[in-house]
Each structure stands twice: as C-alpha cells, then as structure tokens.
Image (cartoon, rainbow, N blue to C red; front, top):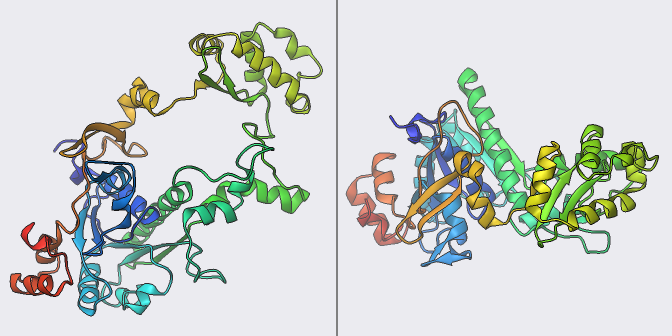
Length: 409
C-alpha cells in the first residue's frame, strides 16, 4: 500500500460527519482527513457551503473551498426538513465523530443535539465550533473570526503604534479554532478507546487565540500594563524585526538571545557594540532599541538581500527572507517537505500545503478538487445507512437531498 494512501493514515477507519460550513469546522475536517479519516460533508442541497462562492476562483472553482474540502465526500441534505434530520441522525449513528458549526441551540431544535445523537451512538464524539462556545452569557451570539480576533485582544496589539488595530487578511481565528477542534477530537478518540464512551468537544473561536495571547493577559493581571502595538518588535528582545535590503526585498532577523545578538554585531563588523553599555545586554538593547534598530537598518540597507542572508548564515544569525507566495512555492525545503502536488480538471496542476506534521512513515493523502455539491449523496446513503434506491428517488423528488446526487453514484 503506498505511503500516501489515506488507508495507511493513523486515523484510518474513523468516519467523520461534517455538519459545518465556511472555515473553522471544515478546517478541522481537513486536518482529520489529512491523517486518514473519512469525511462525509453535509451541505444544503440547493446552495451548498457558502465557501463555494469565495474568491479567488478559477473556472468557477473557489480556491479556498478546494483547499479545505479536497478529498471529502459531499452529501446534499436539507437539514431543515424532518426527513433530512432523520437521515442526518442515521448518518451520525454510523459515524465516530460529528463536527458542527451552527449557532448553539440550532441542532437541538432539529433533534440533532449531542444528547439525542448519543442515545443511539454512545461512542459518538461531537466537536462543536461556535463564536463564543456552548456556555456563558455570549453563547447565543453569532460570531465569525473577525469578531474573535477583535474581542480576544489580538487586533488591538496587531500593527504599529501609529496605525489602527488590525485584523489579519486571512482566516486566523478560524484556522486556530479548527486546529483546536481536531486536537480535541483526537484526544476524545484516545479516551474512547479506553472507556468506550464518546464526549463533547466545545470550541469557541476566541479561546485558542486567548491562549496564544496569554502573556498579555498575565501582564495586565500582574503588572497592570496593557500591551500596545509594537510593529515588528516583541518588547521582549532586541534587535528583532523586518528590514529592507538595498534591492527592495526584505529580511527578518530574530536576535532574541545574547549569543545571537553578539553574532549579529560580528556579522555587521561592529563587534564594539557588544561592549557598548547601550547594547551589551538585552535590557540595555531594549532601552536603546530605536538607535540599535537604526544601526541594523543602515547595515542591511546597504546590501542586497542575498548578500545579507549569506553573511548572516555564515555567522549563524537567526534570519530569513520575507517570502511572498511565489517564493514559498519555489523554496526547495518546502518543496521537499511541506508542499504537495494538486491535480484538478478545472484548476489544473498546482501545489499547496499538505499535512501539518509528520507521523511515522505516513506522508499524507493525494489532493484534488473538492467534490461537486451532493455528488456522493446516493452512494453514501446507500452504503452507509442502507437506504434503498426507491427511497433515495423519493427523497430526490421531494428536494430533501441533492437532485444531482442520485445520478452521481
């Protein structure tokens, strides 16, 4: 069996029912699929996951949707209908995990809440991803990643002192929440192997961000100091930052330890800085960060990026180019270890990031375009829950399942 066959993955044999759309929940599904789980993605039979409408697109295919949903099986079911809800219950009964991202209370109103589903499947694990979690005074509020990035404090400290609080230009909070949900699922699978019982995994979009921002919370509650925007500085070590080379390209340097700072001074031909009272220790460098940064900027600004990086590498200074997507895609280290081939009829040949880590000799699955809406409905309902052909035809006729799915099996 080839190493990139999902059947050799550590989660092979785990079936996941994905009742989630947009970003965070599907991210969790993608992570689990990367390591061998079977993902049955339930979508509205008429509109599908709204992420199918995201831009950019090529030949009508949303790139972001494709990245998160490649390799999943799409089943079109109207969960607002009683018949659709019954089908979902049947699918959950045959699944190990349910991932859902509706507002708290919605699934309960449809008879698909955790307590109801576990009555017929005691080993079921449900991962619930919502704006504010299933409990607490804000639990009923809607929430997207932008709200989590704002309320967690991330946007407040992101940017420069003279710029407004800044949200990231990608799904930061959603992605981290997806990682947390996948982590919670794998922990619950491990516990279930011992107890035989499933459990609920409750993820709020903001909580993983709060963990990352924990130092700023601790700083306030111990020192009553509010962390402010510092640009490329951390306020904890100097010199650190992103610097422009003579050819207009950028270099990142993290001289975050005493030995690296001294090696940087040596690389710049400025050994005397190490014995200068203003720069001899990290505390002194932080107190005189502006003048030190000007020295570093001046040295880098007189050389090309390649020259700077060669000198710094020779002196074992922690530094790297500030890559754009074109440079990431052509980097030999990323090509060998991280990027994977993508094959699609409409998107063509491309590469994209593969699994987030290595697990034994398993190198991950193959990747292609995401499934068409409802393309797997008939085969999943027939093979997983045992619906006969005449019942499937009736469900198609009534609009409960995708009309295109019955001919796709």
